[in-house]
Image (cartoon, rainbow, N blue to C red; front, side, top):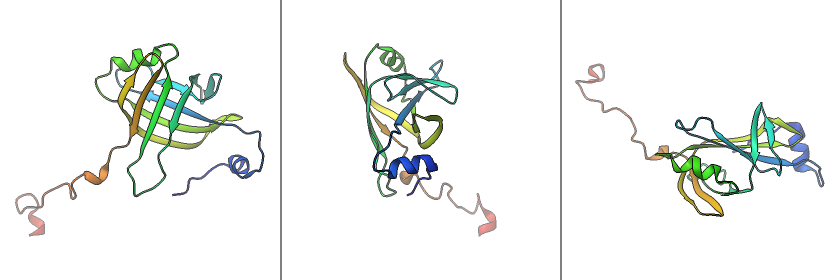
Length: 157
């Protein structure tokens, strides 16, 4: 599945050499959090669309862009100041995670977005916070959603 990119991003991706830097922005949200946790892969804080993304070292292995596979990614964030652990520790269920890719020269323009991930299998220690990012598997949903009976759908019979 192809993803549209801006002309500047296409030029940077296809250039033999470029000064353009692509950043990964993560937004961890949950209804019990006062405000979402926002982190950037850059070494300094990034302001994108008016929101400040805090510089945290992290490793993200993105899922394959395939319709045949269930999308899962692995996330590992360095536990620098324990803010993320404190926020995740109090959650009853999985937070949602949005992954966005922007150019450092134009952080307000999102080049690619991977929304609706759920952070599960969360583990943490003194050094890192790790988890698995998954998307709900809609292929396991029953189809059709309704049972067609004469009482429920008399016009069909």
